[in-house]
Image (tube, rainbow, N blue to C red; front, side):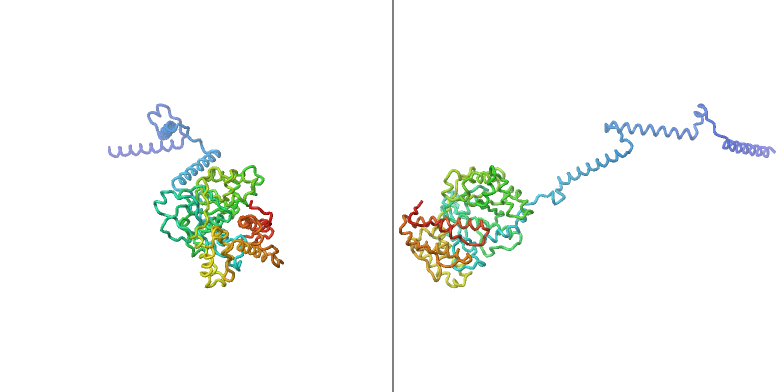
Amino acid sequence: MRDAARSAALLHAGSENIAARGRQAQEPARPATGLERDQHPGPQADTRSNQRHAARERQHQQHHLVKKSKRPPAPPPTVSNQVGRANRSQIVGEMKAKVIKTYIGPTTPAERKPTDTQLLAAFADALRPVAEQCAELVTSGIELGGCREDEPLRLAHVYVNLDTTTPRPAAERARGKRAAGALLIQKSEEPRNLSALEALLPAEPARVVLVGEPGSGKSTFLQYVTLCLADQVRTAQGLPSQIPDHDIPPLLRGRKLVPLRLLLREFAPTLDRAKSGTTDHVLAALREQFPSEVAGHLPALLKRGLALVLFDGLDEVPQRLIPRVKEAIQHFARTEYPDCRVAVTCRVASYERPEFVLEGFPRPHVIAALSDLQQEQFVRAWYAELEARQKQFKDRGKDCGDSLLLALKSEDLREMAGNPFFLTAMAALHRPDKPLPNVSARLMDQLVQSVLEESRKRRDGAAGKSATPELATLLAGIDNGLDVLRRRLQLIAYEARAQRHQRHEAASRLVDENLLRAKLALSKNVTAA
């Protein structure tokens, strides 16, 4: 009975609890008192406590970050802040790019500086017309015995290296070494003087002045050097050679230099309105020789010493322009491009005058007259070339060479043969059917008639013979007539060349008859002055 009563009581109490919880769920919650909150915190108090704790934690973290970085926390994102972040990203990107360039190198072709090999390669194709023009022999108006214009003689096949009168340093003579020139023949005794190539290309880059008499071969020497250097720049890039069967002299062989030849008689007029000559004038003249995309590399080429600049013919500059031309050369060589090799040619007589002397340039090297050995080398090479190029000389080249060398032994012609211009003239006049006279006056007569005949052939409508009296007879009545004629003919050599360039007839050998007669001016009132 007692067990049944206890069970009934428990059941009644459980029912009351269930009913009470139902009423609490239906009634709105009332705020709890402070005591109740302390005694019975409840779930809402736990949530608020957690929120306060999280807020204090965030505040602590922010305070720690501000103290560490010494700057306030970032504001909430806005449009301006988004732009700021973009700028910061750009700055970071630029910094990364700078690091890459510093430690890895340029990343675009425009930022990369070309190497020496790339600079030389840029000029290779543009040097083709230079090499082609320099490959042909220029004879300054002398008729070449029937040589066809479309088959000119090849300079490299007849060129003989020149010497200077500059003594070789004692140390070099002791070593017993000599750089070979074209058609070198070994000799038991080393020469005491420098060759023209040795003077032009010393061990260290330098400024050089080469002087010589009219007709001494200064311009032809620069033409030959230009040909060899230009050809090597081209062949290094796999381009065809203009002189495939020519043995380039050791001093030029393997040289990585772009030849830049500037004819001063053509350069001087560009300074006519200038107050003074500057490097910019020289650069402008050099740029004209190349396409624009190649010419842009000239300053870098010059600064790195990868060029040989040849200023040809200072004596051919008009008197009033000499100071400005000198200023341009001096400023170019001494100030802007001190590591660039520079050479200047001039006549001996002109460079002895103070107004021609270049400041900062060493004493000039004088081109020497051809030795007997050099004369023989030239004559043999000349007729070998004619035999290879012209039918009338087939199988007769050696005999012609022998007979010319025999004629040169005469005292009357020996002195003349030392001048390359006159030796070339003699070789051009000496043919199988027309031997060279062994008297200077007769030779001069033939030379002048040859020049006039060559001119006459190229003038439309011209016919008949010259009315000029025989020179041998005319010279007999003039004091020192032969010397006068010799000097006047030497002037023809470069006057004719200047005339040809002015007319832009690079391949022509035309000489104006009026020019020739004016330069000779042979009459009984002519003096040796």
